[in-house]
Image (cartoon, rainbow, N blue to C red; front, top):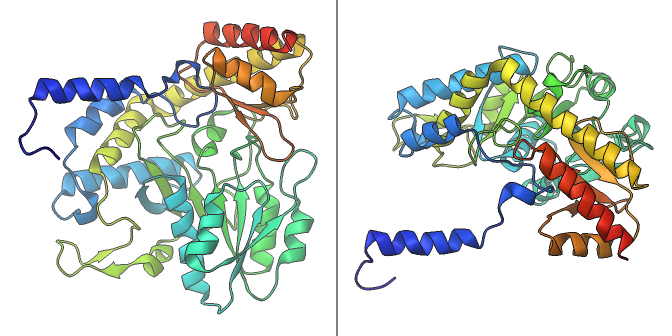
Length: 376
């Protein structure tokens, strides 16, 4: 830090230069986040000083959080669900499994997750001392329920299902996992960090949320397809008693107990989530998801004309392409400004069709992809 402060104009210029080094979303086909909705940005700025870690001071913001959880609960099959706004899917997953561990109180706990599970579950295993067991996937990259059942033992505390897997956008058979959970008296957590704001608005209906008996908790992120500001995740429980194992005394705050992982929490993120959900409503989100799925269809159609097939028919707005000479093609695409990503097993090109994209960008990508393939 310099001894004397800098003029505001100079500081803003430094910030502008730093931002120029960031990647614009325009050609990003790899991110699960997107440009936030303008109303979320306005709400975020309005509540920028609100701290939900001491919500006794910010009762209005706390009421907004309760309304967000109510709206999310209605969207996810239970308007009586409880929970709170987190920093994102990782924190939500940690807290869900922390509840499962603390409620079961086994000395050597293990959890069974699909091989497609987000890497946050590896963090959870390390942080919480829970053995992680990874179940195999079927030919469509959904978890194999037989593989899950084979790994359940007396030390298992939780099963995890994915609704909108990070790599393939696939939805596990949550209803069948729920039957396993009920028959073995186990906690069932559904990671719908991405899919939570997509699946309810698809034309095809899936059983993945609290409407399925046996689902205990759900992760769903407003800052992904919910189009809220970062960071805004969501953790919902079916029963309020699931919050109790997370509580800790907070004697010097205006609240007596706190159940969040983070101490200081952004009230701005809460306000952003409330504003965009209230503004768009179910119909608004349905239109956004419809547009993203239309772009998904156009991308698949265009790449098929290039002779490139998806590994599976897209379930949501995630496309995984079997591109020959993948590393070379991705390198050439990057030189043209495109940011893509890959799946682990099998290795393939992973593309997300998010709201910041448009038809012209999709056409341009298909054209550039064709050029990169032909120039090998």
